[in-house]
Amino acid sequence: MSQQPRLTEAAYQGPALEVDRDFYRPIGEQTERREVVGEFTIPIRSGQAWEVPAGHVCRISTVEGPQVGDLNLWNRHDPRERFWASRTRQLQAAHVSTFDRLWSTLPFLRPMATIVGDTLADYGTDSEGGRFHDTLGTRCDPYVSTMLNGVDFDYHCHSNLVRAILPFGLTEFDVHDVLNVFQCTGLNDKDEYFMKTCPAQQGDHFEFFAEQDLLAALSTCPGGDLSKPMFGEDNEDPVENCHPLKVTVYALPEGLLGDWREPNSPNYRGGHGLKPQPWG
Image (cartoon, rainbow, N blue to C red; front, top):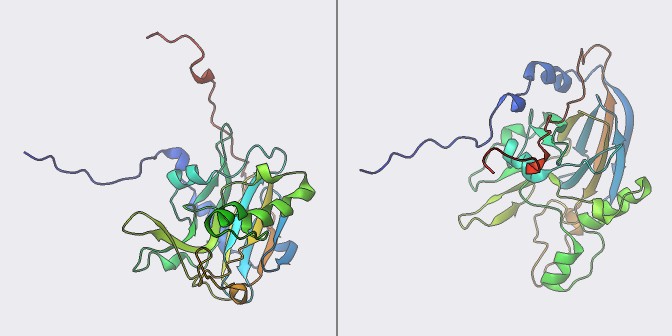
């Protein structure tokens, strides 16, 4: 007798993954009382780093047309704590949206940011399996470009992020796997990663609430809206499909956060198996 397959469910579950939507919903919706404390526009094919204090909201928005942005996050006081794309993919989803959290690396393992606004949240999954804001892929880089087509190009997202963080005392070794903001991606029937033309429009935005003091860095991808392939032979330069991205940092009105506190790390004190065990 064949065994009935069980329903597929999330591998990771528990109270630590539950989000208080009644707390975060007003943060995303009550925008009229926010105070702008920082705003700038990142030109095409470049990058910039900036600080987001804990308890503030950061918005990334398209200002002239569709554009993909590659986002990195670090704890402002200890860059060893940084965004962990693969664990976020497991704890949240491969494509993230409102109320999903962006988690940090071990041994910190705590929310760095919670997404509170996404004008593309209703896009869902398209007919080809494409979805927005992915943790599946990573930044484009000159090493892969040189390997695949022999072209040296120093304005890939990796290079843009490297230049962006140098003024903050970080180096190329601190750049890590990204959140691909406004990028529409998925896996095809061969389980291969694909990228689609970005359907974001002028004025779309993506917002996150800083759960700790953050250093953020964003690259405006040299592929622009990704309507043209970046790798392969005889590819045309898609520079005409590139657009800037605007970043806005907001302070929230007094009283909105209530008794919110910065998340703690798990209270693990096990020593990674270095203590004698009863079965040893």
